Structures are given as C-alpha cells and as structure tokens.
Image (spheres, helix red, strand yellow):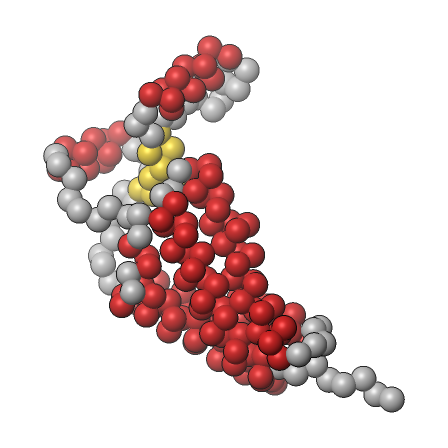
Amino acid sequence: MLRVLIAAVVGGILVFIWGAISHMLLGLGDYGVHMDKLPQEEAIVATLSESIPESGLYFVPGMDRSITDDQQQWDEAAARMKTGPTAFMVVTKEGYDGNMTKQLIAEAATSTAAALVAAVMLLAVRGPYVLRVALVAGMGLFASLSYGASEVIWYKFPIEFGSAQLVDQVVGWAIAGIFMAAIVKRPRAAG
C-alpha cells in the first residue's frame, strides 16, 4: 500500500508540473481562448453586473426553465440560438483577486487524488510495463473524451481548446504513468 501512496504523490506532482509547463510555457491552456479586451468591455461588465443575480454558470440565450411544457418558448429559444450569438459564461459576481495560491493547491490535490485512482488501478493490471504506462495515459484520454469532448459538442467550446486539453491530459498522464508503473507492481501470485 505504501507503493500506491508513493506513486500517487509522484504521479500527482508530475501531472501538476506538466500542467504548469503545458499552460505557462507551451500555452496549451490558451488555444481557442480569446483573452484580449473586448470592445466596450466596461459596458458589457456593467450589464453583467446588473443583469446576473448570482455567481454561476450561464448559457445565453436563456429561457424560463420553470415552464418546460411551453412549445412556443422552446421554439423561440431555438430560434435565438440558431441566429446567435450564444454564450457559455462563468460569472463571479464578487470578482477575483488574481492570487492563484488556493487554485494551485486545489489543482495539486486533485491531481494527486486522480493519481491515487490510477495507482490503485495499476494494482489490478498484470502485464508488461508498457501496457501499464498506456493504462495511465489512457486515463487522460478517457477523461478528455468523456468530459472535455462534451464541452465542444454541447457548449461550442472551440475545437482548438478541446484538442489542446486532450493533448495536455494524455501527455501529462503518460509522463506520470512512466513513473507510476515502475513504482506500483502487482504482487506475483503465490504458487
């Protein structure tokens, strides 16, 4: 069990470090993301501040979800979506101080928790080292296809963003897998 915990910590640290490299040096986190100041940004921010009641995730154009059986409302919403523009927004009413310490700690913790899952799964796998590395890398692919692809499909995240996140996850977990598969070895059957 100690090897599983060691592998989890090593894997979590490696994925975290890879994430820093992929985002800060390679810019994978910026693919498909427009970070430039919008024209009339002050007016947009003022409108958001006045119009949005609380922090949360919003899809525009919206509709009154309490009325689910009104076909006319559904048709109008579909027409507004078809003509655009549409938006998928994370709104933080209270702002953000820019200090990333809490986010970095949370990211390191979740990377380590995910690495713990991978390390436990490695216990169950008999096979060559390369297969065990591929299993961990495959977990990054699985995560990207099962969740990240949905962002592109349903919420129209840019394909460049989804593709970069897929590369980020697969490479990060492959790097972690190289070390984790060497640390966690399935015990040989007695006999």
